[in-house]
Length: 230
Image 1 (cartoon, rainbow, N blue to C red):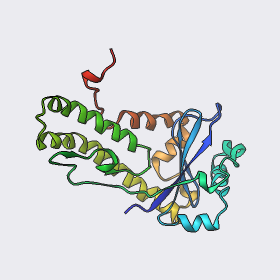
Image 2 (cartoon, rainbow, N blue to C red; image 1 turned 60 degrees about the vertical axis):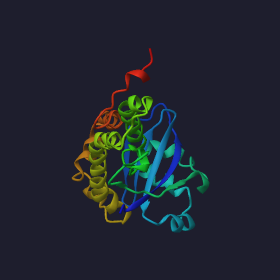
Image 3 (cartoon, helix red, strand yellow; image 1 turned 120 degrees about the horizontal axis):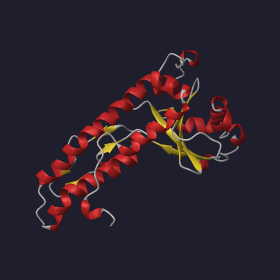
Image 4 (tube, rainbow, N blue to C red; image 1 turned 90 degrees about the horizontal axis):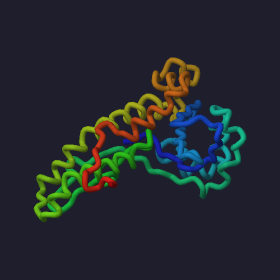
């Protein structure tokens, strides 16, 4: 089971802000900022099942205060989140079906594999699933000859990248997220753990690399010829 849920909300983005994926780690909270051009899509991670309690006990402005303590360039946006209605709860799950298909049915994306918000990869994997399914199944659909074996081919194609990304997410859950949301993460130790976070903090240009890898995927899916623009 995943150790956390996530609060999703938006923060205005300024032209002077850094670009790419920004991890934010404090003594009792982990957040991730996803660069969406004119705004940050933001996820603050909270202990599993703690949403109701925190909403009742904590002013909504504490979300931005926590971020600004770690990310000084957000200090001018501490009032960006004004109401709890702007904060959506994501009940985080990380799992996948043993079998994605049966006769006449194929599951893709979240229906086949629920992803953690860590890395923001869920939509990318879903699109890549769809591209693979289109490439493999379109000729059979046109000839009305789709078989269960054809559906199985789609799962075999997409299983490896799904398993790799979920494995990476589980490592992040265990090493960073669980200690942070349970109050066991010692900020004084952050210069020594974890290594990827140290690299991101010291070499800002590398922050764009995860975005590139997420967009391309572990196993990139070529667009079928019939779907390409002339």
